Image (cartoon, rainbow, N blue to C red; front, side):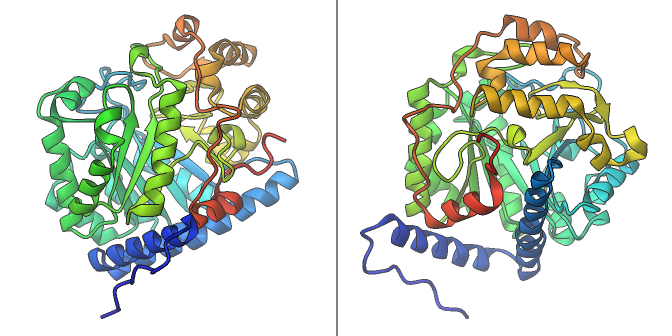
Length: 418
């Protein structure tokens, strides 16, 4: 048995504290996860993910943007009806066929991609989800889920294939969860899904869309401690985006609340044995948009190629160029214009700050509304510009050396705003 990490005697500095926190997390993952799953994560996501980013950076020097990470909404179907959801979950469910998903991943792999985020709706409602994971054992998948469909049997299947991590959303206390998600008994079913994943030794994450109704309950040290006690390995706190047909703007965070979330994440990274993910700040604490930097783009549940999940306009689909996703993305005038317009407008979220510019851009390219409700243009008309994560003068740089190094070299920025 390997020795348990020992807390350093000197803790007067974030680098020392952060080193101990990372060592404690590593020890906890080692004890609670299969070696095979750890190897898949380290090799497919870690090593191959870094190589994919390096290829992305080389392409950028040639003026070519093809994202190293793709996010794929494989269905719009869902068992919940969450406030502020932009997906047409109340409409007939569509599933991207396995053959098209397989071709998409294979095409992206030809250009170095090995990491894919799988979204919905609820991804586990897709009958071929496990089949997709099995078809690409050399890739790593992060599955965004409400956790309700994850039984011990389903978690055992994930353990068998070994190349996926469930990221399970928790949106508040029992009453808040029921209100936010439009059903009753939501939290207990979600917690049961988390427990099934932990029992089956999966690398397990919990995501929270932080908003006014759950800020005080979940952006708390006690919640982090509970996640660790449950056996969760990482958490993702992302700020609520009031978009979609019922935007629920009253749930949006004020700038000082966004700073509070950012400060909380910085503190917990140095003190707790849990990984903490964020996608909207670089190593210097400056805001960014992953789609504007070209680090990721999104495939909608009908195969539409979109800038990001909340920008539901497209000119291309995964079926264009005979399924060659590299050709489709690199030749997309809409995606190129989005990256340029977003980066020139703000380091934050152009959807929130300047919905008028987003609408003008979509109209300029004759883009189609990719929703089933066909109200995306009208929704932009009614949106009022509001602050996003861009908060000049109030940047909070990364304090943990590991996150600081990883963000600087592998995961964000790359000159998009220079």
